[in-house]
Length: 360
Image 1 (cartoon, rainbow, N blue to C red):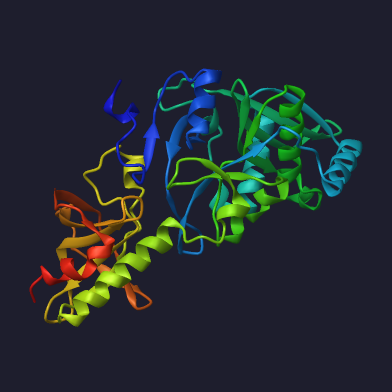
Image 2 (image 1 turned 180 degrees about the horizontal axis):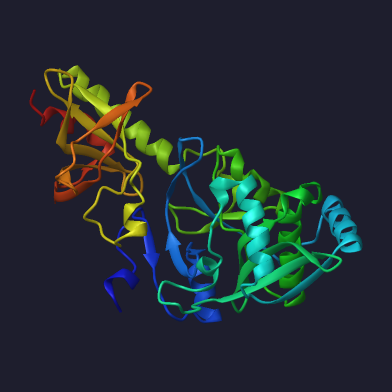
C-alpha cells in the first residue's frame, strides 16, 4: 500500500485515502469508522474553516434506519414533488444535461461549485473506485436536478445534490436526500450517511432535518446521538481553553504569547498524509521584545491526549516571507510550517509546571 493510502497514527491529522477499488463491505467499514467520501477518495478531518472564515469542529454523521420513518412534513414534500416531477435512480454517469444543470447551480452558488462532474465519478487515475449512483429529477423531459450517492452493503453515503436554481422553491437538494433515504430503506440498509455536521455553523443545520442523527465522538470513537454531545465542549473549544490556560501561566512569568490560527491545517488532506506539517487549526505563538511573532516555535494542545507539546518548525516554502495578519485579538499565519522537532508531552493539568520551564 502506498504511503498516501495508509491510515495515519494521529486521528486529528486530516487524512485522504486514494484507493482504486472500494467494495461495498469496505465502504461500510470506512464509513463506520468516521471516514467520508471526497470525490472517489475516502477522507477524515476533525476541523473546518467555513465560508464565514471561522474555524469549527467537524463531526461525522449518520442516520440509523432501523425504525426510521418520515415525518409529516417530509411525507408532504415527497408527495408534492413526486406529483410534479419524475425521478430515476441508477448508476451515476456524466451527461451534457447534468453539466448544464451543474453550471446553472454554480452561477447561483459559486462557493459550492465543482466545474467538472468527473470529480465525483472518477479518481485521479481515472478509475471509479466506489459504487456511485444517482437520482435524476425531471420536469417533463427536462433534467432539473440530480444527486450522487455511494453504495455500501448496508449503508449509503450522500455525496452531493445539484439543481436548477429556478426550481429552488421545491427544495430539490433536500428532496433528493429523502429519495436516497427511501431507496436505502427499500434495500433494507442500516445507515444513511449525510457527510458531517458542524455545531455552531448554520450552513450544515439542514442535515438535522433528516432525523435524529448520530455523530462519531472523537474521544471515544463511538457513535453517539447528537443530542447527547451537542452541548459538550468540542475539540476546538477544548484546544482554545487549554491554550488560554497555559497562556495565562506564561503571562504570569513575563512571557508574552499570542493565539495563532493556521488556515492551512488541512494541507495534508490535499497533498500528503504526513504528520510533518502543522495540522492543528490553532497554536500558541511566542512574541519577541518588539511584539513580533517568533516563527520557529509553537505550543500546541492535543484535545484527545489532553497534553501540550512544543513544536519546532520552519516554513515549507522558505522563499516566501513569513507573514501574519490580525484575527481579532489573535493572529493568522500566511505560511505553512513544517515540523522538524517535537518535544515530549506534558499533561494539561501540569500547565503551571510547564510554564516554569520557559525563560523570558
